Image: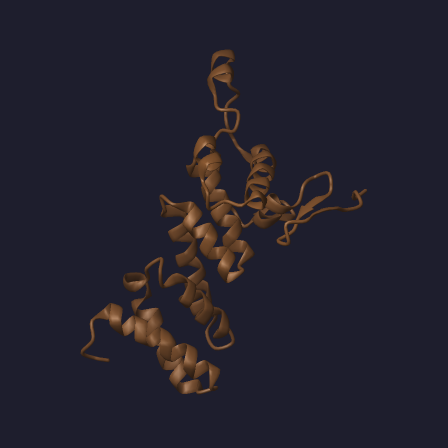
Length: 199
């Protein structure tokens, strides 16, 4: 391992961490996590992020720092990408709602309505969530009112002018894309459930 290039070393440490944790080999797991933390910023690629996410979640009882650093890597990658839909698909596969919401947010921030409409990787449920998120998040934008000319010229579904946050009042970012103020919940099973309105 000492003679390997950093990306190879990182990739091997990732596999060793997963296997060692599975077999409760605590010292080997800790060593592999140390390697991952040392090389993560230089060696993490979008292709490795799903594997890294899996290992970080599995090893959370051993290293909270690894988990936190991996989540930070995911958030940075989603915020910097020019293809947020790729990250949406990836976050759906790893079943992480927090990161999935971040990917929805990135789509609203970076893509125009025509691009969203033409994007074949988006499902009907994705489009419903994007519409719900776009309307719900508008109230958190700190923008100047538009004059009459700008109002006529703007896109009816303009990109968000807002930085992502984990919480908006008592609602999470995930809630912004899945729960409406009138009680509709957009579930992963692609069912729309009407809930009793809250008082």
